[in-house]
Length: 253
Image (cartoon, rainbow, N blue to C red; front, side, top):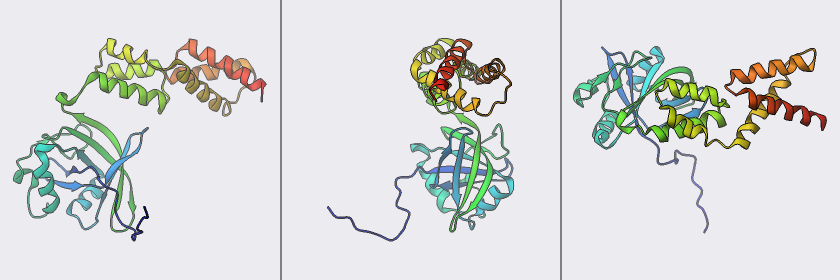
């Protein structure tokens, strides 16, 4: 089957549609945005692309903050309506009977009816052409408790932190405790970590760190490597094992 070539265009569909709230609790607005997504894991970063002509553009540019509110079936009409009306003429919260909810890290309100609200702070504005991209760091995620599955969340959190953030089990466990995840659930998913993969990650961390450490002898070098790995949340037994592996690997170089 042959393909037809078209001129460049925005043909990446479907895209998630979100409601972005901005401004303050006293004077706020909602803009419906389809051009949004994740751009980094650690630190967690997202983006939204907005036309400079939109009423919300200057609000976000001046405040440097916004909240991404995910939608659901109940918010379908409000999501569509907020995308075709200008906040310069109407109070979208009032007209759509939406509730302003104070955020924890930014001054703009969250939409209480939204299942998940993501608080964001702008780090950079990229002027791309018709749209400007607000690159933002995620400051906090607020989720309705009825949507949270503790085990599913814990599994995803563990996999993300040891594979991508390269955290050790101790640091992961501490972070989960701060999120009020039960001890048994935490241990369950930490124990599911593939030991060979886990040690390989630690070994690669130590190998990379070794190149940047200045030490007068092997004893001092190993001490600095141990302290580094401990700060990443790895246990001493695994650190000793990998330092020994690294020493053996060096002999073959």
